[in-house]
Amino acid sequence: MALRGFLTRREAILFRRDTGDITPAPVSGYEFRQFHPPAFEDAPLFSARDRAARFRARLSEGHRCFGFVDAEGAPSAYLWFTRPGAGNVVPIGGGVRLEPGGGDAYVWDCRTVEAAQGNGLYRTGLQSLAALAGSEGARHVWIDCAPDNAGSIAGIRRAGFNDVLRWQVVRAGPVRIFLGRQGPCRIGVGPLKVPLTALSRL
Image 1 (cartoon, rainbow, N blue to C red):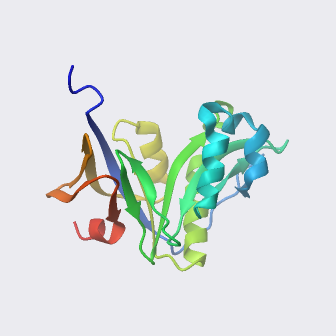
Image 2 (tube, helix red, strand yellow; image 1 turned 45 degrees about the horizontal axis):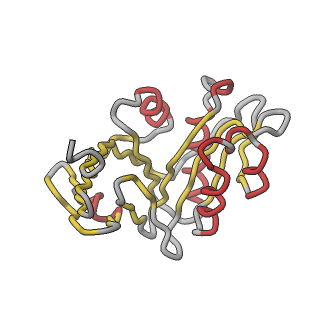
């Protein structure tokens, strides 16, 4: 009982795809677009768990939010997108943040409303962001997923991503440990930053 809240662990699979040769097919009845702060205010998709306030803060940090709206203009899915910039890092849990390199883009925190699931929005959104990343000079797009999330893994693979490695983030009080398949590759006290270039060499 003494360790409750003291020791936490998160495991994930890291996926990557090249940005070349992508032509996402449109999804009938939906439009892919970038979301700006007004979209966060009224849409049910952004109302839960204080998402609107948190997402406005993310935009101010340089992250971008993309997704789909339905025929009535209501947001039906979102995907967060990060390119290198002024301190842009991707929070992956446990106080660990990934830092994209100049040739990288990262997609994270994706969600589709239940009524729109099964229409290929996730797959097409990932492909659309890979195409965008390529147009901005990125060579690779990355995304991670919990190993027990079979639906998300299937969508990631259908979008052309391949498994790269598994990692674990272990947090014991103030200590963060980032474990790759060959053992610890980053250990630190307080927020821990891990460059994606370090992962590509594992």
